[in-house]
Length: 218
Image (tube, rainbow, N blue to C red; front, side, top):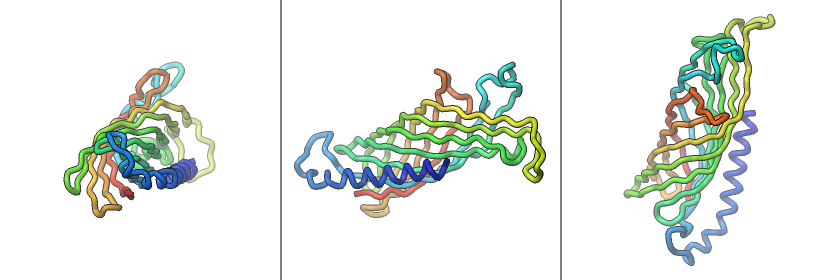
C-alpha cells in the first residue's frame, strides 16, 4: 500500500512537470500577481512526535480498551508547486507516516497514516533564503494495529489484537524555509501539524512533524 501511494505521488509530480513545461514559453507575456513564475517538485523525509488516543471512544462498550499512543513517527513523501507572481505558490503533496508502538505494545503494533491534498502557501525571498507559511487541505486514511498480547516469533493465534482502518479529512498547516544551494536545487525545512478530522471530530492523536527535503526548481 505504501509503495503504491508513493508511486502515485512520483507519477503525479512527473505529470505536473511535463504539464507546466509549456508555460515557461509564455512567461514573458504574463504580468501581475498571477504571473507564472516557475515550478518546483521533490521529495521530503519527516519525523515527529505524536500522542493521544487512537480510538474515538476508548474504554466504552464499543471499544473495550483504553490506550494512549505516543512516540516518534517517521515517513516520506513529495510535493509539487507552481509559483505565481512574487509571493504565491499552489500545488499538491502527499505523505506516508508510521508510528511504531513496540515500546509499550507487542512488537508489530503500529499506527500508519497516508494523506495528500492541495496546498497553497505564501513565500518571501531574501537572497538565497525563502520563508513560507501555508496549509494543505485533502484526505487520507489511517491504519491502527494494536497487539496487546502475543509474539511475532510463533504461529499461535493472538486473542487481544485490534485492527481498524478509517478515512479522514486532512487539514495540515505548516511553516518553513528554503535555502537555494543552486538556482535549480533548494534545501527545504518545514514544520507542520496534521489534523485528522473524522465524523466532524478532530482526532486525539496529534503532534508536530519536522520535514527536510530537496526541491528541484525551474
